[in-house]
Image (cartoon, rainbow, N blue to C red):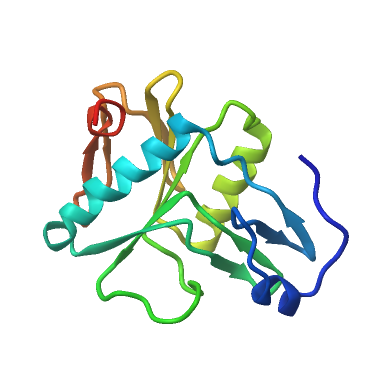
Length: 169
């Protein structure tokens, strides 16, 4: 999965990619999506979060572009924004939570790069979910921990998502 030749930011923002792609320093990077387990986990996760939107005081989005800096956009599988529904075509402020659902083709160095970029941008939590092993991890600026009890969590606000809701839905 390689990148494309250099393209301008304007071209990236005015082009429809199916599925959407990341934009990193002028290079279009494809994302691993389109497989049943990946798609199902994303849909169930977003549905679970949206059903509790009032409880959490948060909005969940599927594949919404996030501008990390002037020349870099990432497209998390799912993200959560606190407070009011964001306006505009893409986010320019850090979401509260970014969620990456692993595909069999994903490689950890690339996933870790994305996590580092999110956390450096100011995202409070990053969850990584592996549909194959049915496991999940919680990343913050200070720690990495596996959700050994089967529940992905955040604090302030407290958002909890049982992995069973994603894998057995």
